[in-house]
Every structure is written in structure tokens, then in C-alpha cells.
Length: 357
Image (cartoon, rainbow, N blue to C red):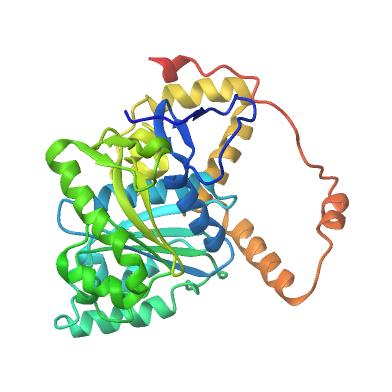
């Protein structure tokens, strides 16, 4: 839906473009403005998270404005776009009220995306004891007991920027799913007057989307034409602030990004398998041998915060980590010593059997 200046697909040759005009492209068959890319915003987060020990993301908006859905999409896209392995865990009020003990349940040596479902109850006026505990735990979060330093991404959902304790609302990135009149005052104080035109446009645009099921791109098109998106089909408008610039992006649901994701589905625990595990494993062991496939499962589970290696292997890994912190090693020499070489191959196995039932 929308007035298209030009369509650019991944297969197209280089088009003649006017650098001052927005570019229309297709994302999974849906027209969108390139400058409003959700994935471009997430890649900014990923680059930061791969370098910085603790990354804080705030998702701010009214109830039912899409905060939880956005948190799902962000967490999913981080673990898909990053070169690092990540595990995801959703934390609820009961987990936050005893946050230090919650941290002790996290497996060490794993990079974690921790989604705080709603921290609005930790408002600045109440729950002072809980706030103090959370603040203390957050300062120590990258040093999980018994393990090496890891990367942590914290995703907070809350209703109103200044409703939280000042320390807890500090963020490296913020996504706004709605902006009320009080929040507009916060924007002006945080970003300055020059950003307020976009903020007011966003508020009006979101209201239009809810009532008319269409919302507008803020970018001017050729010949003064307008580009519209269908509301929640599959996008909603969101404001993205990276502490230096503000822009409107379009956010899809996680299931639109990828209908099936075991890592995301397991984030809250209690997920039910869609396949017969015994049959799937039997079929996989025929393809790769039982020893090989068991090793792959162990490796995958470790990346997801479940360490199933023997105590001796875990001890040896921690020993190696500490050794690498004490002295510089040539990793190529280590590999050569054990006759190890990088593997380049294709899967070469059909995805059949239980997977296609």
C-alpha cells in the first residue's frame, strides 16, 4: 500500500536515484521506505551490544500500544543479526522483586538478552527496597557468579519515562510505541525543540493509524505525494532514539519476521515441542551419527544457557578462559597443535521426516 516513487529489490540493478528522495523497497513482499527500516535500527543496537558489556534498551508506551510485541521483535532480531550467540529470558514482577537470586539462576558463560516484561510497578515513589535491589544487581550483572564476563542486553518495558527511578530509566536506546502529552514534555527536555515536529507528527499519525487503519511515512515523496502503510499489516510506527538522533521506524511482529523461533519461544519456559523428539533425534542420528548429533545439541544448549558438558570439560573451559586473560595466545598455533582446521561445508541433508509432518 502506498504511493511508490521507485521499487528497489535485492535483485535489481542500480537504479537512477535522487539522493534527496526516500527509497521505496520491498521487505518480504511489502513496500516500505528504506529510511524507516526496523532492521537498520536493530543493527545499530547489535553493533553496540557486541562491544559494550551491558546494553540497556527502553521501550516506552501506553498499555496495549505494542511494547511487548516490540520487545519480542527486538530480542529476536538481535540474536539473528548478531555474530555472537545469545540466550533470551523473560523476567516478570516476581523475578524482579528478588532480582539477585534470579541472576543466580542464569547459566554462566552465556550472552543474555533479558526482557523485563513490565517494570512500571518499580515507580520512583514506591517499592524503594526492590528498586535498590535491582539497581545493585544491575551494576553487577555482567559478572555472573562462577563464570567469565559476558555480554548482557536489558530490555525494559514501561509506560512513562520519568515514572521510573532515574538510574533504571537510563538507556542506550529507546523505542517509543506511543507518546502522550506528558511524554512530549520529556521529549523536549531530552532532545530539544527541533525534534518536536516529528514527535507531534508521530502522535497524530499513530492516532490516524488506529482509527483509519492507515498511517503515513514522514518522508516527503516525489511530486508531493504521500506514502501510507496499513496499520498492523504488518507494521506499526515507532520512534527510535539512539541518544543522538530521533527517527520514525516501522516495527513488525516477531512471528511476521520468522513464524517459528525455538530460542524466542523458549524464553519464558514451558514451550511444547511441535515434533516427536524421539523420532526427530533418531532420524538425525541416522544422518549424522549419534555422537556427532549429541555434540551439536550440547553446543546449541550451551549457547542457550544450558551447559550439559561434563564437569571436567566445564573446568577445562574455565581454565582456558582464565589463561587467555593472563597471557596472549596465538589461536592459530593452538589449532595447529591439535590438528584442527576451519571447516567449510554445506548441510547436504534433506529436511524431511518429522520436520515435514
